Image (tube, rainbow, N blue to C red):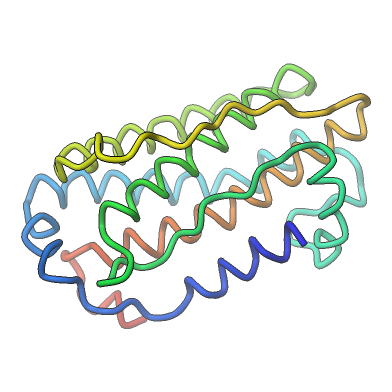
Length: 208
């Protein structure tokens, strides 16, 4: 099921990250990389902090709650509406390279930017959503900067994120906004966890 799979990916990523492979260590230790990383962490936290308020401003159907166990029951509707799953994001390791992690972050952010932008014209209250879309875009820009530092960003073409949602009525619009924000919250938590594992400014934090 769509939401359950996303949730499972989130739970899997909660495991404590392994030490960085040697191939990534030199780049991660670069002060410029760490500076971009800090900006990325701040933006990620800003996104996470703003999602609940954005949800309250956009989703007015009482049965659609951001952190509800009932969300799993909407998996069929997610498929019907056409909401793609977010890329799987894991901690950087020998089996999941820094380049792969940055690519997953970029593609996931691009996906959610496209989804929110597609839904926005059908919603009434858009101010908070517009700010969230802007923050997602700004975080994606920071991820691109880190990708450029790896000099590997052109090796694999970016994921196609063109979305065509099927939204025949207001209820489908509400469900689409709801599920997109639910998925963005889970994905952003994974981004935050992955970025934290790369942050050398506070090694003790990684143990928490």
